[in-house]
Length: 502
Image (cartoon, rainbow, N blue to C red; front, side, top):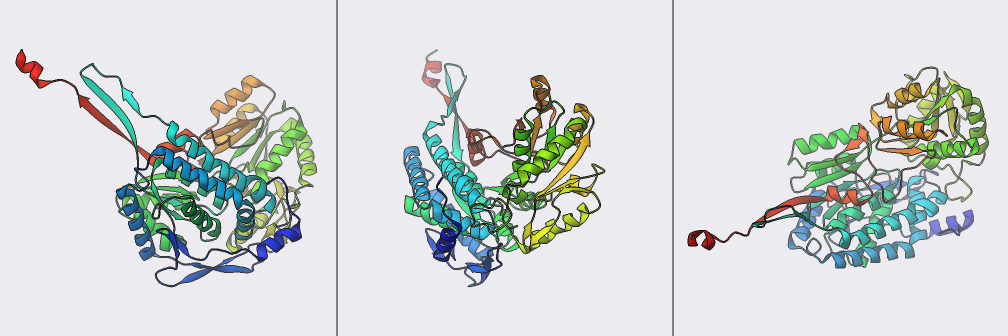
């Protein structure tokens, strides 16, 4: 994946892709039962890529029934762990074999740069599947302390039929984050991709079936939130839903659960993540590179984006000068050009939302950017706000806009960082080790990085505090917890005959 093609070569590949069109249910592609379709478009050009099955409640019912049938008869849930492992390893190999196709498909469907798809999204998704596959036969059940007359077993069992609801910003990678542990645990899944980005989920389902994942175990039902997401969230035969997306929609899934069968709900939601840079931060060039990557990677369409730069007064000017230098390399343009670092926003609606925040920037101090490059494209923008209560500093923009807030002290920086409804990620840059660790402890966020931007890796749990989500964590061994339930099996070893003999 390190050997990138030219822009022309990627466009040639794009023209010859065979794009999936139908839902994938019970081991095969099927049109929506209504026969309805919707258009999926390329955000960079507005061109129609194709039509996709517009599924509804009847399709959800059918997919859930097939997932339940597969789970209950044990074709996957009761399969030997080593056999599930081998099937997922075969899936990872098929993904590797089709990696370039997946990268181009992902870029076309989402507006993401081919550079990111080739170097991050696709290889990381493959790694996630491999990692969870290898973990399948390495998670042990437990025996609790008990008297000699008893054995207390604590065993893990798959939760059952799981609804996986995906966001549009990392369609393939978030699919891997969810199906990796869910399938490893033995669950059957019904995937609802975002309507804007359905293609790679459908292709992966096809590859999974080719890899040996039995029919009915991995189903993908495309469509809108109202027509597919809500029926899935309310379905009485769905045991659990894992949702990644906006806080507003996450609340809806809690209502769906409360008003149906009280299914488990795991939420990974939004963020307005602080990046604190203190006066004593060293290697400002490296700091600036992290700031730029944290704010503008994936066009800022990232729940963990470091969108609030909280910088101490004495270092602000030097840091912003270096940020400007690094941003020169972040070219805006054709997502299929491997030289481009900033692609298209995912949809016209989202472009309109981000553009409205650019209007708000005009009332503040714009250090860089602030302009629309073309329909769907926004240049990286660095804006300093006069008040931390500004909507630019409070609301999740989900675009290439970095808000700068000046502070006088470490204590003010921490207080301001925590003054948000969100708590997904945070970062702190300082040369003082004790202050770094103290700050990391004080920050109310699920992941805190020191002298870097990042989310950890597959070995570390990822999820939020406050309104950034709850109920479980993605990644790491802890991701398996949300797709399993604990059962206690208590064995009484006493022999009644012994008592009667007395």
